[in-house]
Amino acid sequence: MTATRADVARLAGVSPALVSYVMNNGPRPVSPEARARIERAIDTLNYKPNAIARALRGSETKMIGLLTPDTENPFFAELAKAIEQELFDDGYLLLVGITKDDPSRQLQYARTFLERKVDGLLILSSRVGRAMTELCDAVPTVTLDRTPLLPHASSVETDSMTGARRIVEHLQMHDIQLIGCIAGPPQTRVTEKRTKGWRIQQNAMGYAENRNLVAYASFTPQDGYEAAKRLFTSKTIADALRRGEHVGLFTHADVQALGAMHALLDMGIDVPGQVAIASFDGTQLSRHFTPTLTSYAQPVDEIAHSAVSELIRRIDTGGQQQQRRSIKIEGNLRIGGSCGCKPDGPLLQKA
Image (cartoon, rainbow, N blue to C red; front, top):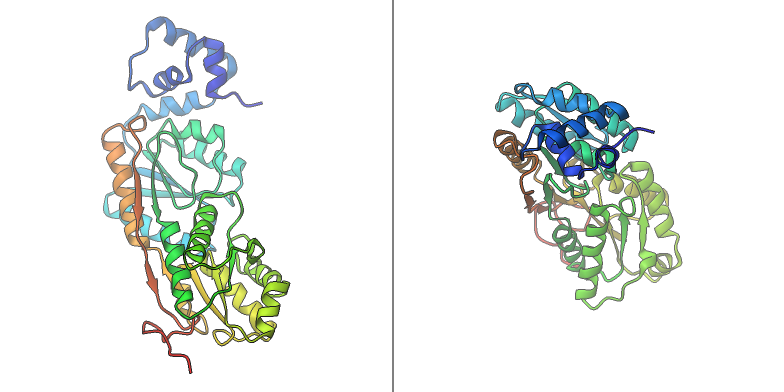
């Protein structure tokens, strides 16, 4: 089993923080006796971050590591592209690791990046384990979007709850009461916040909450397709459509909406005539849907600029141990035809 910082601390009889101070050569002094015990424990346990720490004591390399789940999701791809441009303009080279949301793959990439002496890390991931958290203590780090908050890393994200409320509010403006939700993977921060925003806005309008109106899915068209099939064959929504009610659908990502629209087409359900759809992300892909997709657009250029600026600030101030900053960015609702509006225009009037 791979040794951790906590294992080193126990063997040396010190706190995990002191182990980090020895690895990072600061920011606080460590007595010669404690340093000697820690170094012996590191050697005894063959603690691999020891090699990483030695590398980090060298000069700047002007390289930054980005960990991202994939580049097939257009939001991740657009964000990576914007980050690369920001770093290039600031004289940095970007290294990209495609983690596939696999914790072991993520950890391997992070260790490789640190061994190559990257000056900082940008992390986009739904899960970060203990070993990964400890690695992030060794280098300036900024997390993005759905990544869990880390003790010593700053974070940059779109305000998911506010965005979800604005999407649902817009659907409600079409006199729609029954609004289903295709959510992201369960037990992730972004899923919890967007689902909570959907529920709060429904409750704010006095509409009864119905947990059967939520289908969880990964951020892929195929999962969006299957989730829509589950929702629209459920008794609640199927009965509403048979009664001629106008139904709404909020998806947590544009790629889910793409799959959902294909599912509704296969089921003979008209969008937006019978079902009004609005999504979260506002990727370039959403403009090529038929009809075009109404979506809460995440400003990827602003997110990238804020993340890179914060990371460089932490690098310049030797800041992996400094107080973390949380930066929230507002998006904007981009109107398409999928909700029943004229694209980028006012609400269509009902006959």
